[in-house]
Picture 1: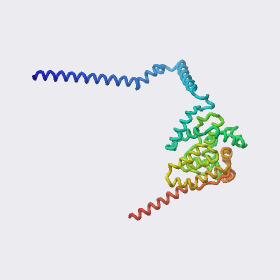
Picture 2: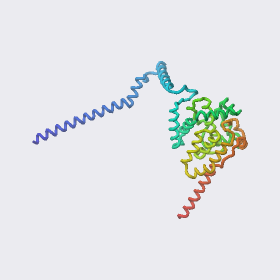
Picture 3: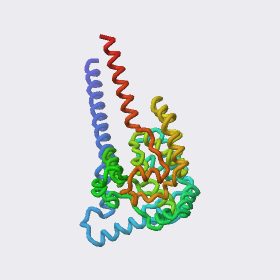
Picture 4: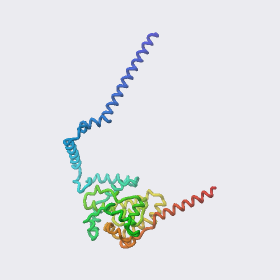
Length: 331
């Protein structure tokens, strides 16, 4: 009986050992296949198949370019039209709706991400809105000249070195100091991508590039309250849908004290000023940089709002004083 038990135990050990070996072999094989399919080996195999591991001669580069051209041609065949200008990406109606929905949700929850705001702006820039702005420009001598000359707002075109040396009360100097204080640059404005009509695309680009002029003219900082105020000004003056959406929805995510400031002071100022001042799309800002800023505001029909930075600073000081007072009571 003892010999039989010993034999059975030995046989069981050999069986378990063999199964363990088989399991190890299976795992090693699976890992090898997985590495080949999904890892470096797969990339090497793909590169070998495309001929990318050989010396890059003229024939190789030619074939590579042919493959790229073929892919682009296939992609273009799915577009509703050919690109109308450099960087243009034509979208179908369904794609535009998806872009509007996705960018709208993302903009509400992540307004700090500029890409969301850019995409929302273009997806809501409907043709009839831009056509209305176009007619506004065509009805004005300066607006017609802007459309004809198509100025581009960049640091090179504005000559920042020159602006820094202008008299302190000129619009150009104030614009330079505002850029310096806020740590921004005119070069950071994104190009237009999804608007189909080339003229409409330039008008929207002009609107986008002039946004900082409105900020600096009224000395509004790049914080959420300042941005909402400028958006409300743009909505009232230019009729840009995205600006109106921003002015209406963005305050919902603010603290109560911020909302109170907006509703009591800055939104009423923005709407009143936007409706009464000259159409800002017809202002050739680049030619007014050496003009006295107070005279410029008067000509445009703009009165400056209360200093937002000072209001926030005064409130912070009051909070600090109250905190110190209560701390003294606890002692």
